[in-house]
Length: 352
Image (cartoon, rainbow, N blue to C red; front, side):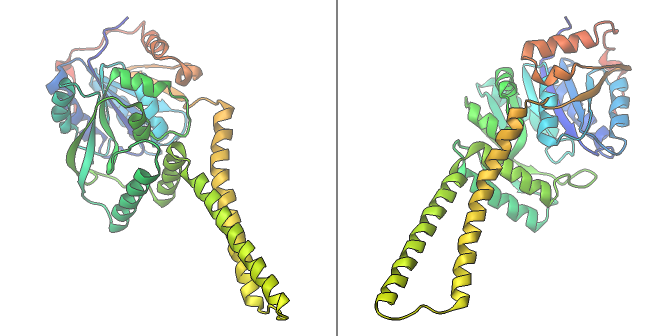
């Protein structure tokens, strides 16, 4: 069995060819400062349509600590992150995006906090550079709504950028849900979790991979994963609607006893439309939860790996890799490169 690294850095990548080499340079430099050569940099290509995988393959050939993982298709940020975490072997695991909005150098500040007993050190954004007012406003609204609705305390203004102990990562990977909201799942695990305030930089290159449609889907996943409050809201709306309907019936009956007829097509249609809208909203909320139950019940693989690369060697992993236990995953990774030559020394690596 190969020697396990002390630190793993996991970075999901989707169409990041322009800035990936710079990210690797900075991340490797930060990792070397805290762990020497005992680290691994796991780059996960999440079905990119540009030259991202070519860049990852070249980096793996140049840098012995780089492990490249290519997913069979685009699974989305959360599952790509899960794939990288599944392949990680370090006692400390840093999850970070490859767009350099979250500075890899903050690892040097996170590590001492963890050495003082923290189980998780997460970045908390005090400022977000290079983002539109709409993105800032919608993000602020999302985090504040989630903090009110969620059944666990999820820190505001945080992403997935965090340093975790091995035991936290193993518990996270043992959680079987497919519609994943990693920052909420880590909060649910508990332990001592410490915030590190920082200013988030603008993207180094490229464009955001979270358009409005994906932001809405992500928000729905987050809320339905950690709150049943929307179901209760639908119940409250139904009870309120029933109360209003009963009041209207009483009002109509009283007017009929007084010999007056209730007229007004517009008012009737308005009432019918309002009740219909409430019913559709309630059905939609229930449908969101039911749809997630259906997806979970199918038990499909969480993600599918096309190939992995380390150095100049390529290998394949079992389709069942995403469903394996932590120890079986490590065995599978060791076996994939069992016949390969050991990594070259750091002095032969070339980044940049």
